[in-house]
Amino acid sequence: MIFPKIDDYLDCASYFKDLYEQNQLINPPLSYRQFALEINWPVSYLNDVINKRRTMTLTRAFEFSRLAKFNVLEIERLV
Image 1 (cartoon, helix red, strand yellow):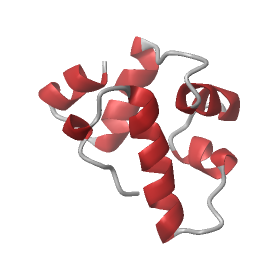
Image 2 (cartoon, rainbow, N blue to C red; image 1 turned 60 degrees about the vertical axis):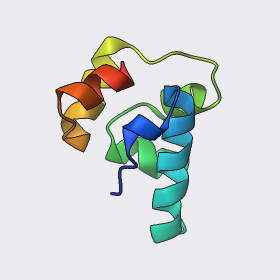
Image 3 (cartoon, rainbow, N blue to C red; image 1 turned 180 degrees about the vertical axis):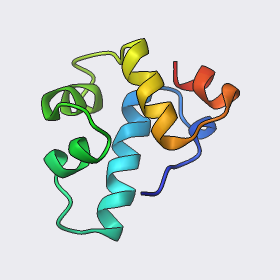
């Protein structure tokens, strides 16, 4: 999985949208369901975050940060 540089984004919705789109280019049949399973999130939650219907919780931010192997500054930027 490719993780874009978090410093280039102002909000988590645009980050996750680009994250999904970049990984879909590598694996064209990638769906929201497959992507959510890969990052261990419910499909509806991922879709709601991308479409700005929901904000990311601290728990989900830390789960994702662990998966993406973010350093402390990147975690702070995500939160």
